Figure 1 (tube, rainbow, N blue to C red):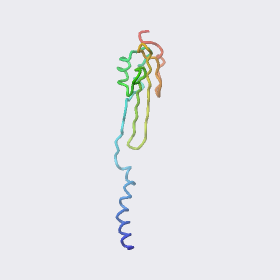
Figure 2 (figure 1 turned 90 degrees about the horizontal axis):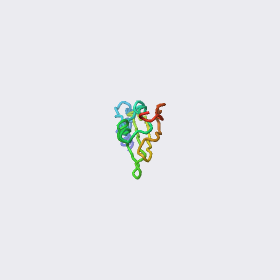
Figure 3 (figure 1 turned 30 degrees about the vertical axis):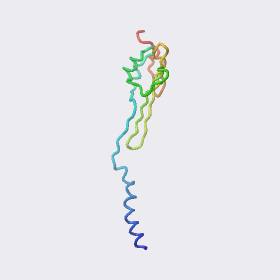
Figure 4 (figure 1 turned 135 degrees about the vertical axis):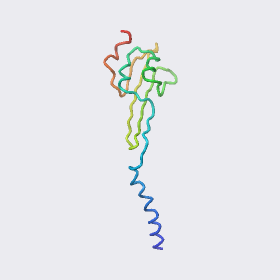
Length: 118
């Protein structure tokens, strides 16, 4: 009986050691959503049309289904090492479908309040 338990332990021991080598295995980074850099955000100006915002930032990840006045740009990166990187940008439009405000994790340029064409 004792020999049987020793045999089972010797068979299962190498299988439990696989977790020790997990750092040696390559894991892929998983990016999801809209990657937006600071240069794109610096181009935004109050009064831009939806088409202009879409040209600068791309298609939003989520739009408000009932009133198309809020666009959500979300980006998430999960690295192979387990670190997570999250960014978001929310663009709000007024009743004339012009960009009214921007919120999120990005620094707006000082010229954001200067309308296009001024």
